Length: 165
Ligand SMILES: [Zn+2]
Image 1 (cartoon, rainbow, N blue to C red):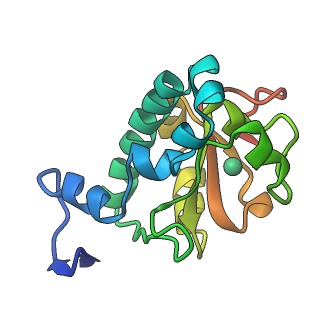
Image 2 (image 1 turned 90 degrees about the horizontal axis):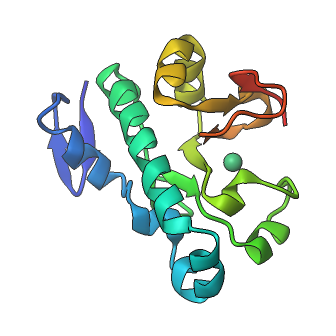
């Protein structure tokens, strides 16, 4: 399998270059926050977003590492230029997001959307539910997230590992 990032072509992905692969996908805190920590500083601080986001990204990194090593081909969203297609949403941003839940976990940095145009990552998650459980993630059902993969590190009300919004 081969992979393209930062203008370089990598033919083998292993534990030694996975960090570079994730960097190439712009998987980082900056992409998760998108400057909203500056624009909505009071909310960012009051809600303890820095800690929640750091924790969420560590879990996401564990999941993406396992998926990529398994051969899942990830790519950056053309909109955000990152594999993160939606990250932290301050209340005002969430309210202006079409289809977003009123009390979305994105508002507390307990959820992340990953760009998944062909559902490859969703499929991998569905095939690796014990891995999600080990990491501490719950997955919105792929049929409700066409084009992205929604993961959260809090259980939904139903408590089901894979849930409908
Ligand atoms: Zn989401």
